[in-house]
Image 1 (tube, helix red, strand yellow):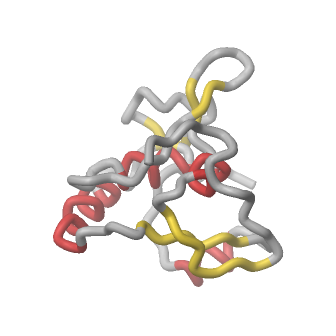
Image 2: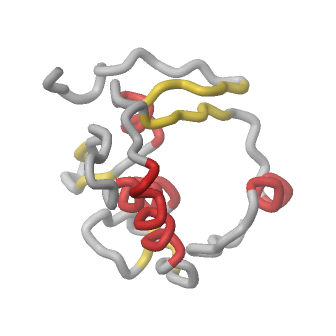
Length: 126
């Protein structure tokens, strides 16, 4: 499958294009909805940028899926605690597991996937 980079599409369009059989839907418990335009604006301003095949989180030139979500969420005035982790070769990466590890995100819906226990990957100060 060709890596498209950053595109804007509906969930239905995405599911038609990409075969996915596992889902965990999370929601930020302390979301200030007044911040949503800033998050959306950031994400939409990335449309057209290439796919980050190197998975480098310290650049805004190209994005991989969870990196775009992470950087968009970090536009919030009070973002949830979601922490990247170090890969074997030493660079930082953000993955679905890092999102699922956050105690600030609640599970809304799952399909064919059980969310792991929170707080297993990163230290959190309560």
